[in-house]
Length: 133
Image (cartoon, one colour):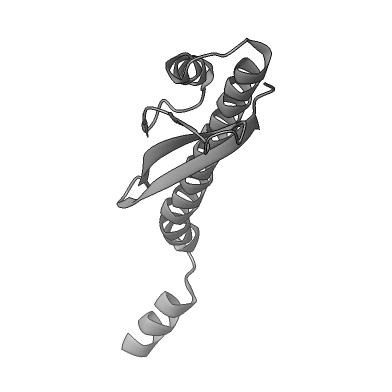
């Protein structure tokens, strides 16, 4: 009698789908959220690259803009950096008579994977722009 019950319990598959779902849903959610976080980092990278391009355009089109004006232009044109922190852009002049400026921006984003926090992601983009004299 006891053996018949054990055999019946082993063959019973009721609830197997619920257990599989309970294991799979948290993992699937974690993967989807991770993909979303990586997408946010790519958006911030695109926004930083766009801002550097606008700063370079501003530096070449307008006659002798100051480094502070270029920094302001870069800061105004950046997008996609709402999740992390966007540091103040840097604009440095090249050596004397070199005719170029180096621009750089940095963005730091904490990675969050719902159930645990990941490492901080630091993105840095830079661009060199040649100024016509």
